Length: 363
Ligand SMILES: *[C@@H]1O[C@H](CO)[C@@H](O)[C@H](O)[C@H]1NC(C)=O
Ligand SMILES: *[C@@H]1O[C@H](CO)[C@@H](O)[C@H](O)[C@H]1NC(C)=O
Ligand SMILES: *[C@@H]1O[C@H](CO)[C@@H](O)[C@H](O)[C@H]1NC(C)=O
Ligand SMILES: *[C@@H]1O[C@H](CO)[C@@H](O)[C@H](O)[C@H]1NC(C)=O
Image (cartoon, rainbow, N blue to C red):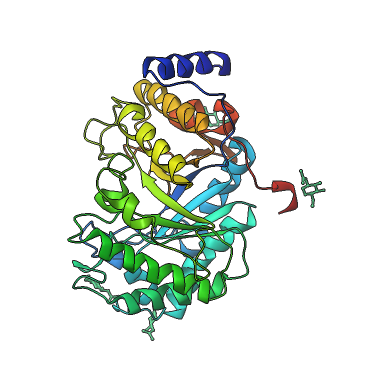
């Protein structure tokens, strides 16, 4: 879809949603998840680390560096999320102590990401759990969780482009205020480790749902989390949203742009409370319905770029090119070719509503 048509399509959707269409502004971030170090992790917080498939040639996996280089050079992406299981980093120990070999392996991916000049999110992909038990609510203590983050942040404290994603998709939390307390432990630990200025992403309940972030109580609870100096600088809300009928991200077809149910109420709350959010997972199948609805979603996000920083697709990395939500590009000889959804909707080179705050030239 040409930009002119896309713009008209998006604008039509915005007025259809009876939303005061504001001037489109460019988003700060666009990118994709580079998955593989999280493979084997389930929503119960178990991770079978024998399933890990590092997206790194030097570890016998797929060419994650080649993918990221392509995404930066050909698509204008400027952020990558790098999911990893807690169990992988500690070699199956429910502690905050990193296994040197395991952490070094994961850091190869973080370093590859930094080498292409992008922002790089460290994402602990454990659903607020370790082996079925919830952090700070029966599972690992907040102190153990804080130690994990202290050790990770110590390593990257001087790297401005590292983003700390406290936890992937908490869900079914007995107490959201208690979870916010666990998040506070992580934030304090990251800042105390010397990572004083980087973005930290704060995840809410219901699989980090953008739709229920406010109504479910996560917004109010996470709004209490502060830096050690009492400010909320660079503490950014973390939200996910898919476009299939049950918001599970497991079906190829898209049925919604999520504007009325998710992005409108979320943007309103963020603006009223002086906060911002980053959409670290979204996506759909490589089909026309997803090109259309995702273009509308991104258009709305861009119209609210004062409070929504950007989006990251799910997913590339070690996923096969025929995975139902694959954003893994095809490699033919030395030429990378994008999946339909990336080339037609998600790439800033296509949608033009996104531009980096990152100076790629200086990397
Ligand atoms: C780690 O624990 C899982 C069970 O959660 C098991 O399947 C796996 O073999 C263990 N791996 C190692 C390296 O100990
Ligand atoms: C760290 O992980 C490696 C595998 O990567 C394992 O061989 C080693 O025993 C682990 N070290 C400790 C101290 O657990
Ligand atoms: C890959 O490239 C070769 C040589 O340029 C070409 O003949 C072939 O059709 C390409 N295959 C695909 C799937 O694009
Ligand atoms: C980006 O970085 C390069 C190299 O450091 C510099 O020459 C250029 O002026 C920078 N561009 C912007 C827009 O800051």
